[in-house]
Length: 97
Image (cartoon, rainbow, N blue to C red):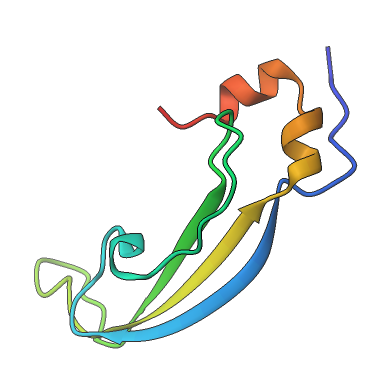
């Protein structure tokens, strides 16, 4: 059985930061101050996406795989109407463990 997609977006963008880093940054949310948002408990109330662009030359074989790069950090907030109207089986597939 196929279900229709909701009429609204799940998350809406609310911010963007650009950082230059000497190494790849994993879990960048640890290093930025995030606003407090209401959490429904069913889904993550906020998504932080870090797009990393290396500024070092790529190698095909073994070699340096880390170095200076640019980080575009995008912040998204959960839509309140999406969280309320989302069917239970969708929530179970999206929920973070």
